[in-house]
Length: 181
Image (cartoon, rainbow, N blue to C red; front, side, top):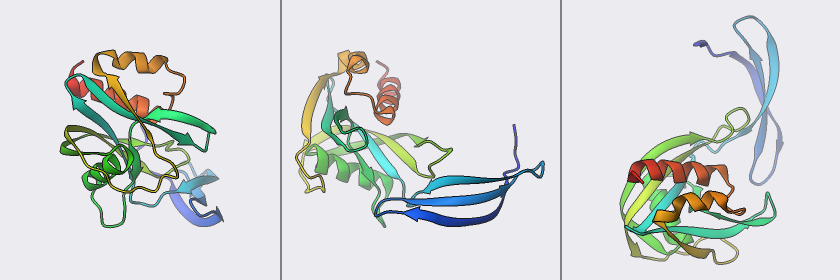
């Protein structure tokens, strides 16, 4: 395994939109080979995803529009960490904005990389327990459909065509391990 990272000889933003910046990075590897890579620059704050456990029998999910695939996707609440906000605070805020519940207990499960070859951001995965009803206004253009899912049928989520986002699938397996299902 390589311990020495390539030397960054230069970096510049080559394209950007309202949401994304594409950075071209000029690298020199330990064997003196030089390459240009492009990557999407993250916001350095990261993002969160939360697996809400309503009770010993029920998971909560949301179905919302995904512009990238032009489809409705079933998944767990997620969003960016706001400036000055801690990851657990963002997790609780996203729960309230997206599905109308807050959590008295949040447990960090893991930090995931999102396509690390091209994308610099990380996502913090949490499990939320001891839920209570609490609604905050979010930025979604339409209400997210709330889905109650039997906890003992967690594996059948993998058979659904609209449960395909890799982050939600990963979060489901992390939750399964944590809950010892």
